[in-house]
Structure formats: structure tokens, C-alpha cells
Image 1: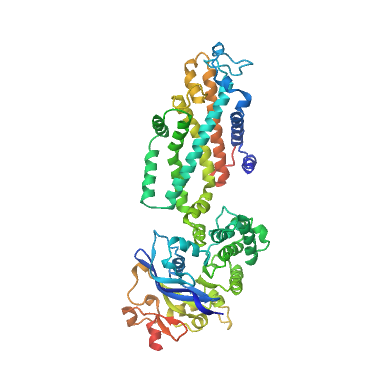
Image 2: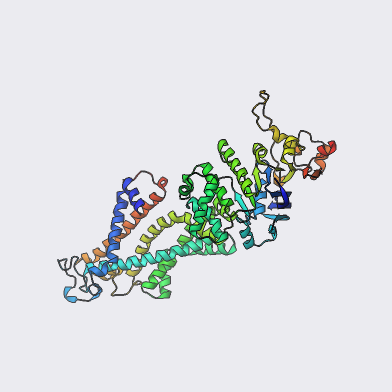
Length: 327
Length: 283
């Protein structure tokens, strides 16, 4: 599915909120037609990574302090001024948010909201934008799109709203879709529909996708590449198939142990849980960030933080002394 | 408008409906004043009819200059509505811009601006208005301006609060993520969410503006004679309160009824825009 140069290449991205390093040296790249999933618990820096890419970290709260965000044809987004960045947003990158209700303005009709990026970036007239919005609604699988375009957000169901938000994101045919937990607020059947829609859109538009989630079933469903984040760093990354089948980092192993499985073997087993919580980013322990929760921690883990160790040439990497010793 | 009337009818808010009716009546009188009475009738001195009692020709009698009270009241409604409407309109727009910008951008400049607004609010509005008229000189234009300027801080403060929270809403971030710039975010995405607040506060401010306008006119700071203005009419005739009370009471009652009606409609609008805010379904 993937070919050519990456659409998005993030290198050594660091974002601080005051003294808190929410994103601490994250690197990854996505190619056309490829889906990268960023997985992690709450507070692992997934959303901060997405906002950093978009340049949407609120100025009063924090800022991107280091790294490059290269978008094909645009260069390093961090070097763009506000006006050029505003042009990139919505035109080259479309973003989908977690809460479809709160991502839609309650006082505007769906159609006018979907048409807005077209009016901003393409200079379409109100009527042209509206016609295009109806087409987009049809494209994301909203039944009777002409009527729905005239509805207000509260008149739509959760799934329909998320489809509308997706229509907004793809309105200008961006090269990259950045989706921040787009299925988390939906119930399971709708989740499956929305995932199918994303896959379908990707096939049709050939976009690159960065998909943020905490749900490994979603990863298994749609990911080509995976980045597992923990406390602001990538602890493991690589091809989705490899990472899911053969996790090399104890955190990834723990996460996979937390996924309930409908028994192929029929045996009911207790769900695993990773003990403890994510350490406070303001007071990270010395050494490995996962040390306090790791069942395999040993002396070296407390002394120095493992670097991202690369294995093979296919982008597989992890941060663990243990696996290094074994490898 | 029709939805509002239907809401008032269905929820039995009869007082608010009465208010709507009264305002409609005053509005009609103000707009059509020239059809009923000529400017001549309202302003020409005719001492033969001075302080005349109500009669068929002069339904509410005449004032101490012999001018028809009805004609003066109707033309006075025009003045009051003009002054109040214009001043509230100007203040609302200025307040929206100042409050909006100060809520949207939190920096030293907007902080100082808001503290300046607070400083103005700490004086009674009528005092601020009197000060401004002292500078501008009395007259209908300076009266309007004075009332507008003295109510800008009220609007600015009122609108800044919601903007502070609205700008952090997901849909504002979402709009930014789709490439909308600051101006578009503030005026297209944040401000339409203030509509209910604007309508409610606008109607209540209108009542206040009518009161302040006639208060200032009473003090001689409004339109100068012979322009009929309710407050000024009361002032001119107040020495006749005991002998011919109708010349004082008529403008007083007109003022009272109009301000009451505006307040009743304001309450109705508040309930309409947020039904949860009202206790019971009216009386």
C-alpha cells in the first residue's frame, strides 16, 4: 500500500508545557496510503503530538521546543509563519477530533460548517461550498445528505456527527488526515462503521493517516505502522503486524495482555492489568520511564534511560535494556 | 420573532406578551408620528390653550405653552426610541468588539483595557453620562453618544466572560485546525454563540437607556426646547403638578409603561433563550 517518500516525517519532536515535557523526542513518518497508529494511555503525549504537528498548542500553555515536522511539499511546518500555517491546516492536513458533538459549532448548520474550509482555502461561494458539502456528506455515507446539510449538529446522531466532522476534514482533499481518537466517544457498532469509513476513504483518496487511539483493537484493524507512546516518548514502533505479534517492550506486552479476547480456546481468563499509573511528567523517575511498573526491571533500568534501539532495517525500534540484552 | 411569540403564548407568559403589545404600540406611534400630528402641533406655542383640560380636540389637554399633550407624547416616543435604540446599538457593537477582543486575546493590553472598563463601571452610569455631556454640550446627538459610551463597559464585561470560555471549545480548535484565522474564529465561530446574550441584554439595556435619557433630559442635558422629550416635559411642567396634574403625569406614565414593557419583554426573552433559567412556566 505504501510507496515513495513520506507525506509526513516527524523528527525529534519535543513539546513542553512549562516544566512538563509532554512530548519528548518523538520521530515517525507516514507514506501515502499508509496508516500510522499512535497508541498509549491517557497522558502519554498522543494528543500533544497531534496538536504539535498542527501547530495548535495553545501559546499560553506550552510550545514545541525542538524537532522538525516535514510535510511533503511544504517543508518544515515549524518554520512556517502563522499565515502559511493557517493555509496548511485544513488544506494539506485534515484533523478529526474525539468528540463529534463539541467539534461542531452548535449555532451553524452542518452544511455550512463542512463548506467552510472550502470557502477559506478554495474561495468557493456560499452556494458552491454548500453543493460540495452535500457531495462530501454523501461520500462519508450520510443518508439523504441534502437534508442533513441543513440540520444543526444537535439534530444528528453521534455517528452521523462524526461522519460530518470527517467530511470537514477531507473537504479540501488533504494529503494527511490526523485523527485524534475519532472512535473513542462512539459506541462499538458505530466505531466499526467509522473505522470502515476511514479505510474506505483512504483507499479512494490515497491519503496518509495518523490515527491516535488507546484501543489496540483499532490498531489491529487499520494500522500499517504503530508507535507505542509512554510518558512522552515512543517506547516501541514498527510495522503493526510485527509489533502486535511480537511485542519487544514490556509495556507493549502489558497493553496486549489487557485486551479482552472472545475465547478462541474458550478458556475464560482474568484480564491482565498493568499495575500502577503513568508517572507524573513533571517528576519523571531516573532511568527507564516504565521502570516502576515493569515486571522485568533490573539494576540498569534505574541507572540510565534506554535509547530507542533499532532492530533490522524496517523501522522496528524499542526502548528497553532487557530486550537489548536478549537480542 | 414568531417563535418567540409562540413561546410566550404556549407557556402563558401573559405579562411578556402584554409588553410586546405595548412596545409595538409605542413603536407604531413613534414611526407614524408625522401621520397623526404635525411637528407644528407638537411645538407651536399657543398660549390661548395653556394648561387646557382634556377635550375632544386636545385628548390629554395642553401643556403650559398650550401645545397638545398627545402630539408631544407621540413625538416624544420618537425621540426616546431614537436615542435609546441608537445608543444601545452603538454600545452593543463597541462592547462586542472590545469584549470579544479582550476575551480572545489575553495579554497586557487587553488586561489594561478591561481594568479601564472596570474603572468606568465603578461610577454610576448617569454620572459618566453627565460628565460626557458636559464635554460634548447638550443636544440629542451628544445625549445618544453619552449614553452609548457610558454603557460600553457593561457590554464589554458581559461579552468577555463567555468569549473566554467559548474560545477554548473544541469547535473553535476544530475550525482553527481547518485553517480559519483569528478574525474568522472570533467573529464567525465565537460571536454567533453570544446571540441569546445580546438579545436579552440588549432589551434590558434599552429600558435602562430610555430611563437615563429622560433622566438627563429632565436635568436639561438632552434635546433642547421645543423638542418634545418625556423627561424634559416632566421637568418643564412639574410646577403645575398640583393644579393640572395631567401635564406632568402623562409623560411620566408614558415613560413608566414603556420602560416596564421593555423589562417584561426582556424577562420573556431571557426565559425564551434559556428555559431552564426560569422557575415556573409563568403566570
